[in-house]
Amino acid sequence: MTPSTPTCPSNFIRDIILDDLKTNKFQGRVHTRFPPEPNGYLHIGHAKSICLNFGLAAEFGGKTNLRFDDTNPEKEETEYVDSIMASVRWLGFDWEDRLFYASDYFQQLYDWAVQLVQTGKAYVCDLSAEQIREYRGTLTEPGKASPWRDRSVAENLDLFQRMKAGEFPDGSRTLRAKIDMASKNLNLRDPVMYRILHAEHHRTGDQWCIYPMYDFAHGQSDSIEGITHSICTLEFEDHRPLYDWYVEALGIYHPQQIEFDRLNLTYTLLSKRKLLRLVQEGHVRGWDDPRMPTLAGIRRRGYTPEAIRNFCNAIGVSKTNGILELGLLEHHVREDLNRRAPRVMAVVRPLRVVIDNYPEGQVEEMEAVNNPEDSSMGTRRVPFSRVLYVEQEDFREDPPKDYFRLAPGREVRLRYAYFVTCTGVVKDERGQVVELHCTYDPATRGGNAPDRRKVKSTIHWVSAAHAIDAEVRLYDTLFTRPDPNQTEEGQEFTANLNRNSLEVLTNCKLEASLAGAAVESRYQFERLGYFCVDPDSVAGKLVFNRTAALRDTWAKIEQRARPAGPDARKPT
Ligand code: ATP
Ligand code: MG
Image 1: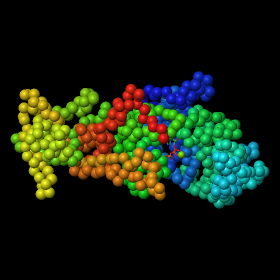
Image 2: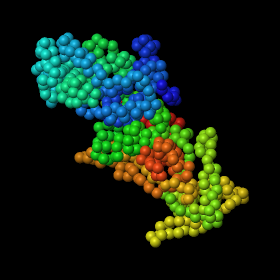
Image 3: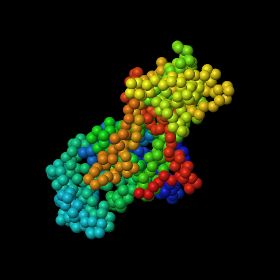
């Protein structure tokens, strides 16, 4: 089952599949896989790969496997396996009964390695990792053959078997494919197939002390699972000849590897290794910190799976890596939330307002629209009374020229309620405005004056007696530079961290209808942005994350770019 997404514009991978269907290359099958290594949480870049793999298979009535590429026991953990599954499900995709682990294939991979030894296509090498690197040569110089390259099949079989039996220490020997030390492609210069590593594996425990390298595991895993199109990112393009070499040398079913461009976003790091450092060094509160580009973080921030799928669909795929504007992702989030998020009134930096001529103790229920984009979402009643809160920034004692909100003597509309005029200002001993006094015009109930007089501004408010308290967390980008990897000499990417990426407001006042709002529910706070209930919320104290502010800079950029057409892609 795959959720509906807008029809995907064609792309070169889709064209390859269409062609293969025409020529019956895979007997009409389309079978893809998403192959994460469980060494961290998934990020928005992985979402691109997930949407592509699941989306293409679904379009052609095919299947997609979830396969954990767990060949590196030192960095892999069950926590990551669980979080990856949760994120793929949350995005809306289902691998049904096709959950696999590369570690399920360890025995088969070992048997295949033995087969390559027997056919003279693999040998045990005693060079150290460093020596192997030295012998490999460079892009301009051919490599040098290992002195162990011509061991007999019998000796290789014996040594490989003893490597498996645990007779040798870590790093003392490897099994290597015997291909071509002069190949232009460095990956074909006798690549390592197996290394010795006495490490506890998250699934196979201490059963193995030799582990296959990614290249020796990946293509064969695809082959075992009958994958037709093995879609991966561009950095594996140079590995494809090796992928092909292994399946050909073994004489097994041969899937087609296809590479596409990695997703990169401005102000964002998409490397699990660096994201792990942010977590370990405490720069963020965890993998699911709402500032993180992880799917867990983005979810906590309030992004919807629909918005992410729409984004992934819109950006398409290509053969050149680039950097997309973060604003494009936010644009899709706003577009989706605009459609579905109920509107409420919330005051995040409250300023007390007393309406002097409003009867003490009186409460009126004002009718408010839940979503102007969707009348089926109906209306609600919002209590209005003599003492209200408005936003501090909606009052200026000395208003600049184009400022039309509250000011001494100024009349404005209170959303869904009355016109009010500011008649007085109360200050504390430091001169800070702490309270406003206003009068209201009872004839303007609902927001219009019978004498047709106009006001230039409408502001939101919350009744003080009915308000519920909340904490609101405002977020900015985690990094200050569009490319967080760009640093001054001697600095690390952490030097680009934005010290103001989180602002916590603890004295926020929300309209009463928000009492009991469920974790993860999303709202538009009128005039402020989209907000989502954080799991830190407890009874009587809601915590909200700002998902996105309302202003959609992207829409403006897009408008300016027309009619040339919106193209967010920027060559790197
Ligand atoms: P990272 O560099 O963040 O550690 P990775 O490529 O090592 O990522 P894997 O777990 O191996 O992470 O990735 C699983 C799949 O997701 C692979 O097919 C990989 O190509 C794809 N993928 C990873 N990062 C991106 C990205 N930024 N854009 C698109 N696809 C990605
Ligand atoms: Mg990887």
